[in-house]
Image 1: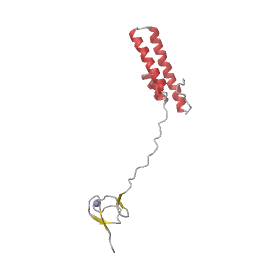
Image 2 (image 1 turned 135 degrees about the horizontal axis):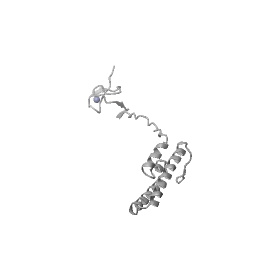
Image 3 (image 1 turned 90 degrees about the vertical axis):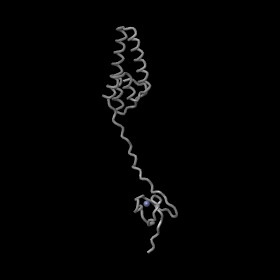
Image 4 (image 1 turned 60 degrees about the horizontal axis):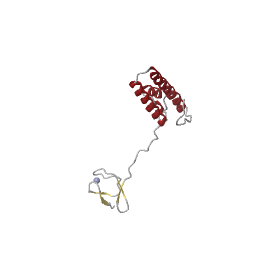
Length: 136
Ligand SMILES: [Zn+2]
């Protein structure tokens, strides 16, 4: 019986050619016809990440904390950003010249944005087609 030897590329010792891994250092190898080829790396299969179901409460609480963020959560990014900028503008005006009408406008916008965020989140949850600037 002829044992064919080959040099392990990892530890440089002579090992039996037909082995799947080096008995000395444990390095896996597949011998090619004439040259060493590293064993193919086994990659775990990429599992598709299941998206979390859309959350109405999440949209509502985001809008409660900061106007526009609930809309962004609902994938209405531009609409949410415009709402945020407009609200910050009105907030600045309100702080500069403290006036009841401005405070009222702020509160109404806030309520409307929360209502909008919750209703649109419900549509997203029901997998309805929601346009980027759609309201309620
Ligand atoms: Zn080895």
